[in-house]
Image 1 (tube, rainbow, N blue to C red):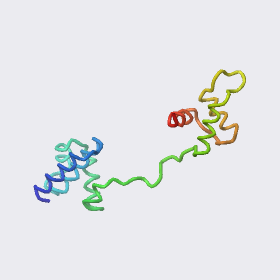
Image 2 (image 1 turned 135 degrees about the vertical axis):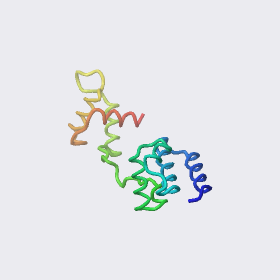
Image 3 (image 1 turned 30 degrees about the vertical axis):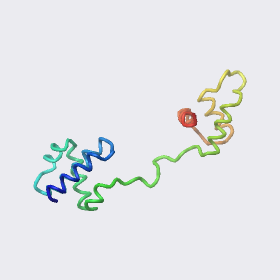
Image 4 (image 1 turned 90 degrees about the vertical axis):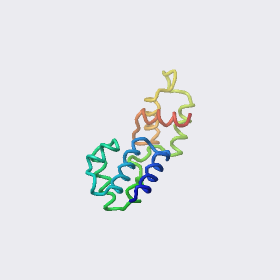
Length: 139
């Protein structure tokens, strides 16, 4: 990679709206590609301000996937944890929340709502935190 191309890659990386933690990896990508075996991983990581392991991973990605493959982030095919509540279950949660609380209670608590969803067999089990996040999302 020529010095001119290297500078253009660095300027593109710095001007793109990308998270700060990825800037180091992209700069490391450019330096690994530009300098090849001339610089060792420790020198590149020091110049870029990232960990040596990041440079090692980038170098491996270059070897396996090429320049474009090393720069493009892969999105996971599925989320790590599936959603507990679908649209219908969320609607039932909101309807329950807007209804009267059980006898002996002045208002709905997150724990009461979670217990009610299990009792109505809307879900098998649910935590009060999931109820809170769902209600917050709807607000």
